[in-house]
Image 1: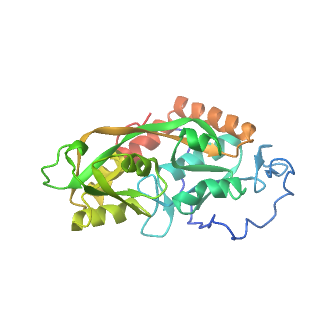
Image 2: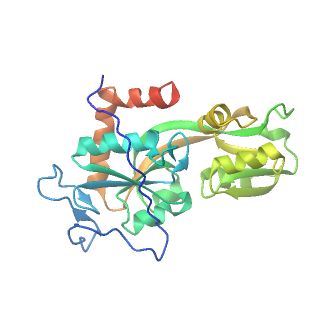
Length: 275
């Protein structure tokens, strides 16, 4: 048994879009240069964070089983547990929050979260906006089609309508395919898979883990076909100038791998190790 005990965090919703009030409470004044606030004395950490003593990590809450709301309305999943384990390592209290996926970077830049732990791919474009840790898992994106379809690879599509989650790297990939005539964006994968199942679209591009998990656990009659289309390398994002927090998270991830916590969480959520 690892030294970390999984905890279920109550659902904390935080809209990160423009015009919404920032976090309130007993936080120290923001640093004029970085916009971050120091942790409270006695919190066990001197890392720059937006709320004293807390590690606020944002995610969409719509990426089952990485982050989602369960039947009791609690925010759970692999990303939530990674947030909790990292917070323990760096001496802060975990505070997962949610917002639409395509608003996560904007919220981070507006100092409404310390980090994005939400299965965010570390693309070159995003590296211009935020600072990434080392990858915390690596998988790949695949094409999903209706169960029983004769399509065996994405190359067999012809003038197809394909669904993707808004703001993902899969959207850009689909738009670059000549044999895809229309790319429809969705707030979350279940919405896209529902349209796929009903025949409104011809395929869905999403992470293989996600599509197969939803097919098995949510009953979607879809299947993964063909080879992995693009690598999906997820990393944790922090503010562009917050190297101290980035380095602390990287060190924490090393410890989580070494002490078996990472593998235990992977086995719990996926039945295999992600890294």
